[in-house]
Image (cartoon, rainbow, N blue to C red; front, top):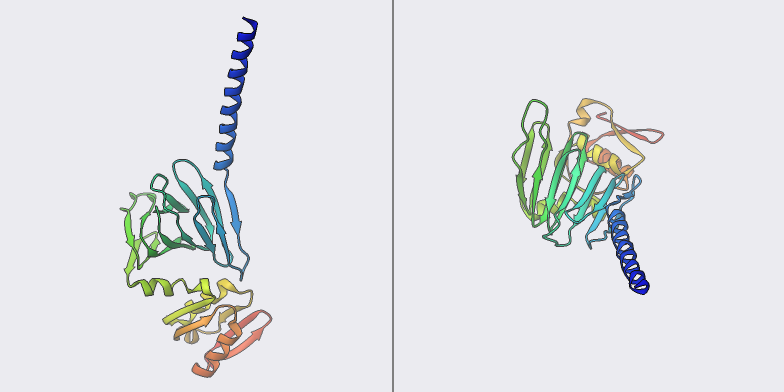
Length: 247
């Protein structure tokens, strides 16, 4: 009888130990893992589910893997995701309450102040916006490949172009920026995301210039020289500032 009782105790303790081990593993799996990049740096990371995240300059994410979902909190900047297929666990990118949800696809999410930009290059992404004070939440929007969506407090604006259009919006992954009839003030903001050396508008006239082309984001000085040559822009250097003037 003593031997039998000892055996029962051993089995119970073993079961408790196994349960404790499973609980510990579950807690560890649910613990967020943080990734971040400095200004001017990109980084690709392999996630535990087999997905891959490419962080743009000055970007931060926190990754939490649980049984119900794969959750990515985009805390700042932009990230491009190549999502491993897992229909049992949606891949959710959350940015200040807005959620981009996929199963197996390729897309980017970018925080721009209070706004969010989603670019889809493969599959379909479901974009959900939270309810705001005094109004209900917007209806979810389905974004097929080729879509570029801008979500603001006023709603979601979707441009459904070609796959090539969407890929051009993500050329930062290869070290380039693409502009098509873009205000110089907006182009300068894009350059400034990747560089400590900043482009600054010296007057409203130069800010209103429109430019197009494909440029290396790592060289704002070369971009300023092109503006001098092609548009007659005067460039004034003030330490790490390149102040642009319309002469």
